[in-house]
Amino acid sequence: MNRLWSILLWSVISAAFIGPGTVTTAASAGAAHGFALLWALVFSTIACLVLQEASARITVVSGRNLGQALRTRYRAGVTGFAVLLLVLGAIVLGCAAYQTGNILGGVAGASLGSGLSPRILTLIIGAVAALVLSLGRTATVARLLGMLVAVMGVAFLVTAWRLAPDWLSIFRGALIPSLPEGSGLLILGLVGTTVVPYNLFLGSCLARGQALPELRFGLSVAVLLGGLISMGIVVVGTAVDGAFGFDALAEVLDGRLGGWSRWMFAMGLCAAGVSSAITAPLAAAITARSLFSDSNAGEGESESESENERWSERGWRFRSIWIAVLAIGIGFGLAEVRPIPAIVLAQALNGVLLPLVAVFLLLTVNDRVLMGERGLNGAWANSLLAIVVSVTVMLGVVNVAKALNAAFGFFAPGESRLLLWSIGLSLAGAVPVWKRVRRLRGAPAGRAGE
Image (cartoon, rainbow, N blue to C red; front, side, top):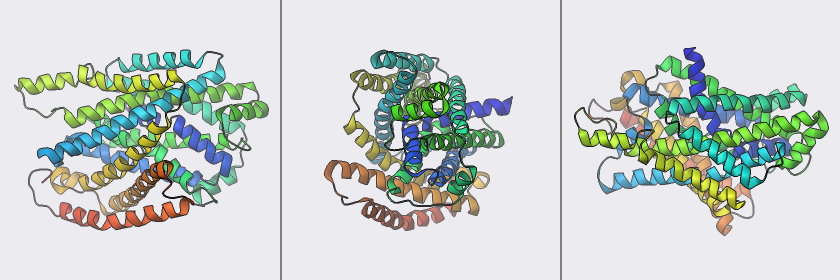
């Protein structure tokens, strides 16, 4: 039972990254390239697991979650406060921008299975998200999301199975990397929809009070299951010939498998939207609390106790964050418009934040002062984490470049120039990071973060 509850708890990570954006990207990959890009999902699932384990291990070993470790390292003066505000702003604004897609995706799924007005469905989904978030206990919300992920997974995996795909082609696409023409940005999109920056803060907070073996088991099962569901969405997307769209895919499935498949796809898409619509505001609030609440204050410090009470799950500061993020998504949903500038901004924020958090994770798990001998990364763990960090840095550069390209056209004529720039900048930044890692691993005992 403990292991089952651990899986349900960590399923919140799967609920966060399998949203309408993942459904759109994965199904588009299947529609455009068949099974050829499944390997990108295999890599991104492993990358997600590596980064989430490192983030959770910081909490278990050091007693500080990721936000508190960030505060420890950048605790002094105006610069430190500016760093915290940058991270918080990127997380909250990014969550708010993506929340719009979550609400609209959930509405799209519900619309496929009902004849209700999009505005009514927006209000229903917003009310469901608000009700779940108002329960006030993160673990309870996480377990409810775990059950919702199970519904979503069954819907997509059953639909994929009934399509009777060529299993040899699936294994070939999953194990043999290939780069079909025009697939570069789509590959990075598959990685970007799975490795989500705010999940690292969310997972680090969920790890408090858990033992490493139990944590690793629950996290591994939940993330691998999430990756499997994403691969199932790719398989479902292969049913579309031509331009991808939710309505087009539903019609194809209806014609090939019968009316039940349309309902299953609608249920999966709606569940993906609702689960992410709950997780994004929750993650924004948890990140803000980890960055600005003083949870390590000693006993008898009444001011700190009052501060912590304000940042509790039922505190006004915690609730104000998730209410604001949820309200923004509902507002854009009621307007029935896709806020393109907000989505471009979210790409830029995600592009800045993801490599920063990934590099910070690499430095932290190699900090002998903070992690001690027991929690310090080994050679194999460092090699794997270094590969993941390099790809996330490249992904971050590409996301920023995509946003600039959308606004100013810097990188037209094509994606090859953009990819070359991102690879070059990633390699250039690797040298100082590894020098810093070596210094941290050889640091003598002292205060954490020095």
